[in-house]
Figure 1 (cartoon, rainbow, N blue to C red):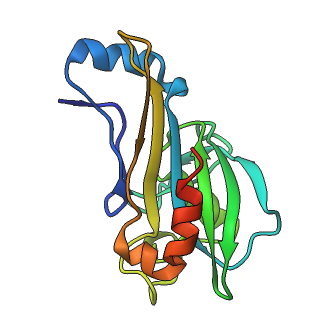
Figure 2 (cartoon, rainbow, N blue to C red):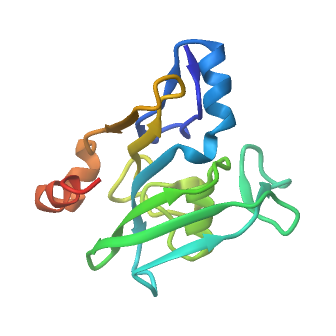
Figure 3 (cartoon, rainbow, N blue to C red):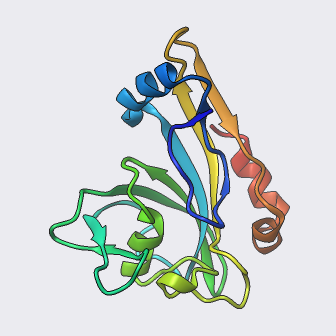
Length: 175
């Protein structure tokens, strides 16, 4: 099996694996055509209900396995939409347009809204024991047949407990 992308440790959800190196190569050439959507719980309330974050990301030279927004980093684009808010946090639907390491975690930390449970990037850890990030939906065209493939992973229980079943089921209806 050949992974097309990776998830951060403690991020739940979908990873797409190719059965052969040939298919992996074909899919990698079309990486921008793999639509990836995440759910996240971020501290506080964002100023806008939706938007696009365009901030370059590079290694943090002062911390091992840590990334930061840097002028000399690689371009990183994240689209977001606020789905619901509670007094201390918000549920976000995120679409990755690039796939930088820790991209979502870095972007929202820099905005002052780190993910719940994400101690590495300043997130509060009282409600979640891991970063509240879930690779929720993936859509792509099969490289040989051209058929559109859509996959959705159930929201994990630790996040479901904080957002409630009504919001999860409402969002599940639209892909």
